[in-house]
Image (cartoon, rainbow, N blue to C red; front, side, top):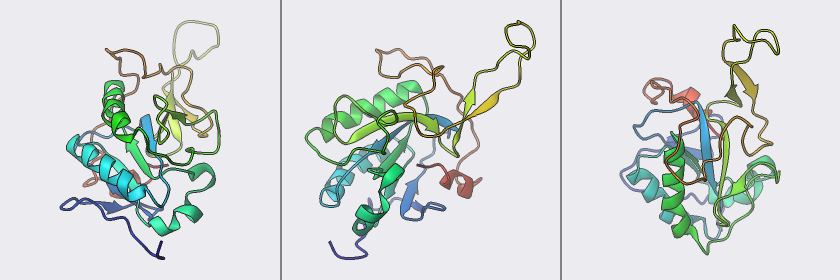
Length: 212
């Protein structure tokens, strides 16, 4: 592959550079942007990345799904390593039902494709329905924290609760204990809040941090 080779992106679509990872380009769509939730990663090798992108990106755009994609294909072997291993396309769902719908839309398309394992920790990202290139994990979208449940001010006593606190998301677990798995049969609850007002027209830089 020639040095500097860039992935061709869908025509007539606005992809913006991410910050600080400018090797990624992000497509926001117009739906509300939660601060955390179930995220997907699609993996690929340099030689099949363009084909996989051609399968996945049109589906995400048609469904108005926020996502980002690593575009300098010639750098995949040097940049997508360690914790970033295999993270070719990142996808951000807005509810548990949305997570299920995205998975159902992509699993069939990606059967038979091959790519590296996502991440470098077997307790983190997990494959979706035995698909070799589609993984999921619950985590923060804008930074490395997720909301933790409210807890009593005094341990073991009912009454006043601490305000909602944050838990460090160290990218080492598939999901926190208080979040239900999304893969059970629908209907689904929505275990995390959807925050409005995060469209790129408000704070593109903060949304760009969304992101591993």
